[in-house]
Length: 330
Image 1 (cartoon, rainbow, N blue to C red):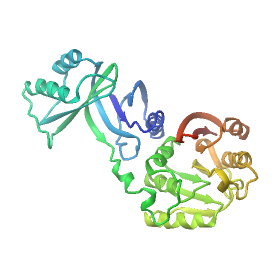
Image 2: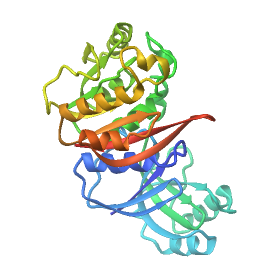
Image 3: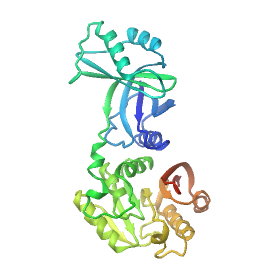
Image 4: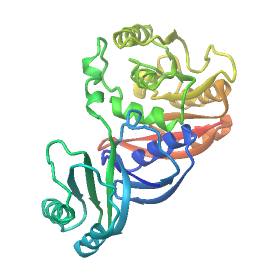
């Protein structure tokens, strides 16, 4: 079966990487068919419910057909396709990079299906169809799941008992956890700050260990974890000397501090990253991944530590600062 993921536009590459990592972590055999503007299409034998895990996806569709993004092709295939429809239906269209009108498209395709004898219900349909158009392609599918992105809003950093400026937003933190390909097991954040990454990891069933060099951050993270009824392990400690056994964690996801706050104990950022990467390599199990947000390129330092680079993404913080998200594997 062909499945389409309608991706969010909040980042150019992270949404696709998040979906693929989730599929891999759940041991789902899949093949990527197409990646268009905010649209990923894969071929799978069976897809378990994963909408509750994803952060940078809007909808998941069971694809009925893919065609050129012109009204003639869309109407021709909609008229002949096996819709497998039982009960009422509704159509919603999203047109991006095309001159076609979403409203007009919904009306014309809906009228065509209605002529087949099916009844429209705009408020509470049994089946929701979606037409997603990119610049040159149209994907028509049956809605399987939608991602409730509002649940991340209620976990915004400002809503927590302990807040500190500059922390990751929950959707972004969840995406990083997902990109680590963690299914279950232990996740370590050696620069845990207020605990945002730990909260998202615990929400998908991971056991969480957080560390920070500043005691006030660990105390604040503890308040936040308790607020969400999360039972994680928190340590006041140095990421350059992690007090854990070798090969004891299944994933590392972290957003190290940058600027002067990062130099409380370290002599330089390079020193901090070099020694913490060596420790991350030591505590990671074989073939497991680390996802690190950094203000400086880490390729050389990671390879020196024994970690292989599996992916890189750019995050623009503001006009003068772009940070790198690097995916490493032991």
